[in-house]
Structures are given as C-alpha cells and as structure tokens.
Length: 504
Image (cartoon, rainbow, N blue to C red):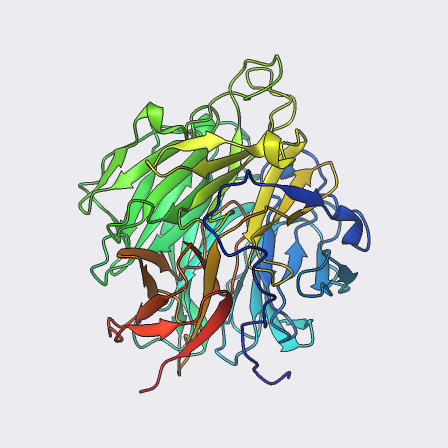
C-alpha cells in the first residue's frame, strides 16, 4: 500500500494576482489523453456517464476514472507538470463493463481512495491498493448483491460507525414487464455492521432517481438525503425528495417540486453560510436559495435557468445533466458549469444543446460565457468535473459525452485572482472528514464549502476544496469538523493548498 502523502501539490504562482476582469478562456487538451474515451451503449446508457476525480497514487495530482457504458471504464493517471499542458497516462482500469458512473471515497479509512462503481447490473466497491491499483472488495466488505440500473450515489459517516453509510439510487426496473415507462425501481440505503455491510433499507416506491446528495444543508448537525428524480417516469406524481437518515423517513414538511430531475450541485453563493442547490432537468435548470427551513426558487432574472440553447436555431428545451459550482476566474464568486445534451433523439428537446458556463457577477446574477470560453460544445454531454489538474490555481474542465469522445479543457483565463485550496484529514474511519465545513474569511467576507460525497451526475470528486480570493493576499480559515467541533481561525497563505489535520 502506498504511504499516505500530503493531499496538496506545490502550486505554481498565479499568473497575475489581481481582481478577475478577463473573460474565461480554455484550451482544448484532449490530445493529452492516451486515447479517446467514449461513454457508449444503448437505452440502458441514455443516462449516466460520470467521471470520478481523485488521487489514486499519492502524488497529489487528480486522476480520472471514467465510466464506459457498454464499453470498458477507463483510468487516466495525471502526468501534468505544474502550470503545463494537461497530460495523462493509461492507468489500465480494472476490466469492468456496463458502468454508469463512480464516486471516490476512503471506505476503510486506510488513507487510500476507494471507488464505488455504479453499473447496469451489480454495483462494485473497488479497494484502492495504492499506485493506482485496485481490487474488487464488493464481497469482502459484504455489499449486498443486486442487479439494478444504478444512476445515483451518495455517502456519509454516521456517528460511531467504522464504515460509511451508502446510498445507491436506482432508475428503471429492467425486469418489470411494463417497463421502461412507469417502471421506476426502488433505491437502497445500506448501513454498515462493523466493518461489513448489513442492513438494507429500501426507498419504495422509487421515482427514478438520477442524482443524490447527503448534506447538512441546515447546518444543525443533522445531514439529510436529497434525491433528484426523473419526472418522465413518475408513476403517481413524483417529486424531488428529502429524507431524514436516522431513522430513514421522508420529511413530511418537504415542499414538493416536480422536475425532470437529472443532477444536483450544492454551494453557498449568498454568503450566509447555507448551501444553495442547483438542480438540472429537461427544461428549466432550477436554482433554489436556502432559507434555513426550506428552499425558495431563484427569480428568473438571476440568469441560471438556461432552459433553451443560448445559440443556434434550435429553440426546443435544453436537457441538463451534471451541474457544478466552481470559481473559474478566482474572483471570490462561485460560477456554474452545466453539461447539456439530448437523451438520444428525443424530438421534444434540443438536439444541438451547448454546455453552459455561467459566470457570477458582483450583484449575484449570472451571465453565459461558455461560447467566449471556447467550451460550448454540442455533443450529448453527461458527467463533468471542475478541478485544478495542473496545480496552477485555475479550475480545469473534464466533460463526459455519450457516443462522443471525452473532453479535457485547460483553464488559461488571464488576470485571475488569488486562490486557496484546503484539504482535511482526521483520525478514525472518516479520514477525509466527510461532513465537515471549511470557511474562508477575507476582506470581511466568509465563503463556506461542505465536504460531501455525492451530487453531480453519476460522478464526483475527492480532493482539496478550492476558493477564489480575488485581490486578497491574506485569508483565514477554520474548520467545523463532522462531530461539530469548531476550530479557531488560522491564517493561510494564498495561491497554494493548505493541509489541515485534526489534532485531538
């Protein structure tokens, strides 16, 4: 097993330490992949197509595990030099077919990232062995076998448990003779029993869940399970759902919102410390403001609904998939990427549907810049990731496409602001402090991010949290750990990643 190393790579200096003022710009570095990877397959792969981002060999560089659909999954090992072009080597992924997505998490707390691999068929847990090697630990860890069509995942560590609680969201019941329409499958919450998995709790009926996120959205120490469900397959008036975890039950006071739900993104964008939620769908992409006791739909004028292609002559509704917040220009305001693409040839929705890059302005509204940035591609995009792949402090972009090659974009935005990365570690089974909050204070403002596993569409990240600082050259950070312990504010250096380890 590779020894645990620092999660933060030494970064190159920022290009220009100034408030962001230039438009975002990206260079196409897909040639830095060892081969063109495609998420392929028929109707059982209309959905899915996620990518997991994590460090699989301890060199502090984010590596990529990409779902393959009916083809093999791929593992790309990061060989990029700090500040240079994006370069990856073939990591020779385990031979797994029928994958829809994957999420990284350290299941056994040994300091090496593992993978929860979602499939059309039996899901798998891959134990990380270090040096980007894996073994199938599905049976070893006692994960109950299934034969579902899994399209969503989220996880958290509950108090006193040696393993994380896992949620697998399932789509259509392929065995139902009345399918695929109006044949939503049940989903499963699987709790640990010591170091194995035991009790399975069903969410029944299911509403064709396509994304899930466990988040302490009220910041009261009570994380809850949010599900985004595909309205196209609703049987009896389905809706977006919220569940209490212990005991598992749906919140009776939850305000029902019905969408053709695809993806979830969560981040505080108002500065009040409570995370907003972005939900993608067929049609409107719905941003909701967190009011503490519930969520309120954002006004149309905020600029995030993106309900139709923003260029071209196809005026039919868009189809949104992966959504992710990230500060692309490091101005201290989170921006928003949305992957778009028709399910297949669905005539009710746009076929040539460009991806969105919505840049947040000082007044809290968003403006479209994907075309200016050069990333407004129109293939059938699914999963994606905003992540600094070459340690230059700028978030790069990975985009997964159905039946088209995976995209790799290097962020070359000029005049970006300062930034800070924060990576956490703590003793015990929850080594990466899933459920913690990191707050960054600079220039009288506080930015907040939660460490989560889940969200997006069929894929997620494990690595340092990224904060833009704008013109600020000084910042402070504090951590609210998963058990509620609050650290004191500490000074952190800008333009680098800081490792914060909990000391009992």
